Amino acid sequence: MTLSLAQMTMEHDRHALPIRRAPDLYMGLCGSRHFAHNPNGYEALALLGRRGWLMLQAADGRSAREVALDVAGGDADEARKCLSELPLLLRNGFVRSPGVPLAQPPGPPERVFNAWLHLTNACNLACPYCYIQKDAGHLDEQTAARVLAAIEATAQSGEVDRVHVRFAGGEPMLRFAALQRFHQQATEVCGRHGVRFSAAVLTNGTVMPKEAAAWLRDAQVSVSVSIDGVGTAQDVMRPVVGGGSSAARVEAGLDVLQNAGIAPYGLVTVGDSNLEGLPVLARWLSDRGIGFRLSLVRDLEWGRGLLDDRHGAGAAPSEAEPGMLAGEALWRVQRVLGQTYDVLEAAVVQGATPSFRRTHRFCDLELWRPIQKACGAGESYLAISDKGEFSPCQAALHQPGTQPLRGDSLRIQARSQTQFSDFSSKHGNPECNRCQHRSSCAGGCPLLLHRRAGDIEGRSPYCEVFRAVIPRILRIAAQELLRDEAARVPVLAR
Image (cartoon, rainbow, N blue to C red; front, side, top):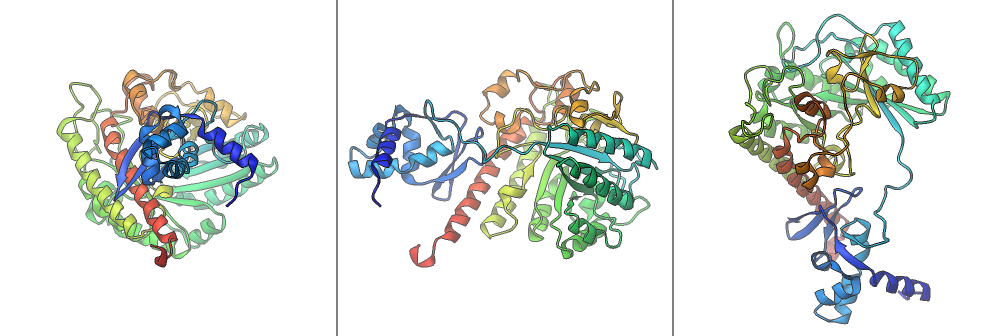
């Protein structure tokens, strides 16, 4: 290919740029290929060729041309080949250069307000770690009208492009007719102001009214199913009120959803009782093509200990640093999670779907975009109870300090919450500020941090778990990139 004079000039100018390896990079090995991850970038994970890897290692503030010549041992032709790796290094923010901005997501980010809507307190399961106080309460029509008025004010505000509601409970599918009615009304309300309405239902998967799956599919309501184990592990963590197996019922519910063309998402709460069964569950979900999130149980209400699911005392907090998972309990969690990610890595290598990078999550970590706080609580997210009261987080809806929902924008109400004295992060803490993963973790669950320390500037009680898990997730994601790259290369060209 012949370059124009303008292109040659631009290449010359770019090669004169000083480049330096970016801070906070995570670099690893996937088979025989190196990869790098920039936690301060967007989708900034990439496999590197030999030349790109050497350029990255040598980028110390000299010009790109000098770095390339150094890597090439003074060979001009080899240096030109090394310089061909520069666009990828700059685009992903793996190397920095004065005046070269970090890559941003394509187009302006969608402005979304997320609301958790508590349809009912009733549930057919009796999960011991659940923070909801069970009773017959549910969202009545008058309260629903108040919520719709607040959604309309949000749509009118000009501050959002989309309102997203997560229907939850208790078990929201016990109030399926009310869910359908609210969804239709909210869609109409938002549509009048040019704002899109979307929704998800968070269900235990054991209640599936006739025709519900078809309606959810046609209405494009996403479905997340809580599942904590296979067989008895599920039954222990999520027992049925009155007896019976929740494992058999959730499997039947998943069959109904998948046969209707819905791709359900798994929500796995990890506690002391089901920890050892995680590798088996990971295999089971992978075999069914179900992406899932692992969430370590949070003692948001009773505060006795970490990984305490109310079946026992759980793991005692560290004496050296109160509130931190440590010692033998930490080692146990890390061991089992390592086995779980071994299963997921094998599934990726074998071509499992759906995409690991797109569907797998661990707690509140965000690996594909930088974050300042682990969720939008108190800013772009709030939870609304069946009584029409709101909280920054659904886990605190039954704690003192909730406020009555008003008719103005949900965004304004989220920012005016008074249940927690200070629910915004300003400075972080020294240890987090020094951590290369801080833009992926941001200290973890803000409510858990606030519960333990009175603010959200602290270090997550599960910090050492995060430090162990993040490299595994990145390696599996790189393995997926390697697999996809191999699939694009014609057999004769390999």
